[in-house]
Length: 466
Ligand SMILES: [Zn+2]
Image (cartoon, rainbow, N blue to C red; front, side, top):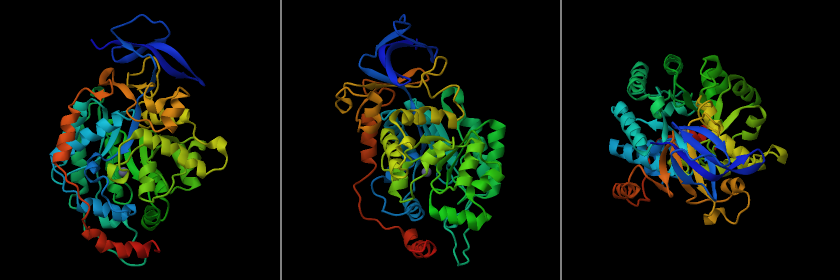
């Protein structure tokens, strides 16, 4: 018996708040109104705020193992260091997926898009174990296996020098077969597990890989996910590779669509922005990662004025270095005030909440089912405790939730009507046990040196004019 009624809870209505009851029947929102009859279990919503669950719309769960320790480097060199120290095993994949899910949930997220780094040779096992972790926690999972078909050095523009790159260790066809098999085995949207096609980006993928992903996306109705123009180096690389911008190229090959989410989008010009509008593509803004790696400030206010859908992500925990979605929403909102002196364009806390919820649902082609407190939509809900010290004194709850520094404010969370956080604690897994495992499998470490960074740094500096 999963039906329940949240009583006397605060919800946002136009420019105000209202106290209502919310009935959940058969995993969906059945009624929202004052003084409803209790259906199923009664839940006390007094002094609590109910919002639709947010989307952590771009992350890489296994980066959790290197958070806090990555050198201060730009993306291209940072990636070299990351992969020098990333011999992961399946148990690590499992634990970091659990950790990512828990941190996302406890900062207001009920969905996570995991651009999942695959263990070479254990690709399907990696996807299986992440799927298992997300199912155990009960968070809605969008698993986007990260694929490429060019070696890492191809991601840096060659500049004047003629560069040759080692071929990638796995063929494009073999990579696409892995994704198709993953779809057959794990893609179960009705059970909250979705597989996405997710070529990492133009910097490391051939057109053949993009074409194969488009074909799979069309055949199995899969969403598409990629990084796009995160750095200035990628902007240069696109010109070198295609003689046009990356956005023009992706449009030409048919990758952009209303179910395509694109992480970062820092280095787009006005013509590129018009293409995103026209193709109804979604931008996933990862402000902390963009700051941490010095990538730049994405022109989010321009996107919004052009009618481009925007939502938020934490990005992997090695470039953030946390999975606190409320923090990403806060920084991702106020960061842009310095880019445009016309304060009428600035993002308000209510707009930020809508971007984090409805914006995510739109990008993942689920706007009919998720993203708002609407009768008929699935019950992916979060209840915030407005008596928590960080949400006091009583002012504007959403204003304080977005602009303050809320901590431990999630009282309850439901995904598809199933409660997975109660009294501030995840109920589905043993979080103390997870903490112990993360502790046991790691050590305090400050000294290490990436050989690959040493090899490529001089070339990177020359090409980037440093
Ligand atoms: Zn990323």
